[in-house]
Length: 71
Image (cartoon, rainbow, N blue to C red; front, side, top):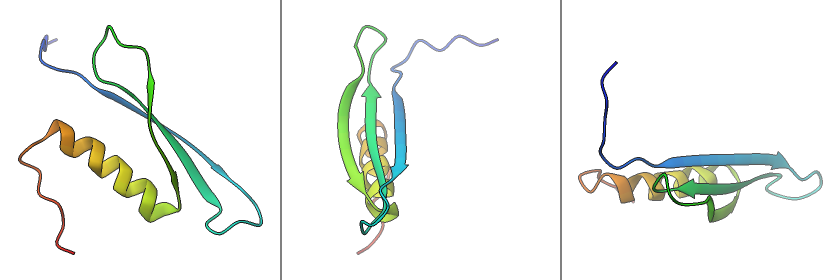
């Protein structure tokens, strides 16, 4: 097994539905950007597009070469 000692990040996405609300899908994103760090809230999001955008933003902090999609 190869050992990787570069930077490591963890993103946990907790999702749930709130009936009667639009959008019903909600999420809280928790991140750990180093093994010594406790999980911290990165974002709260509502709706599939918002959740995906928050995940994309976090990934972009890890990959400076990642291009955002054209608007």
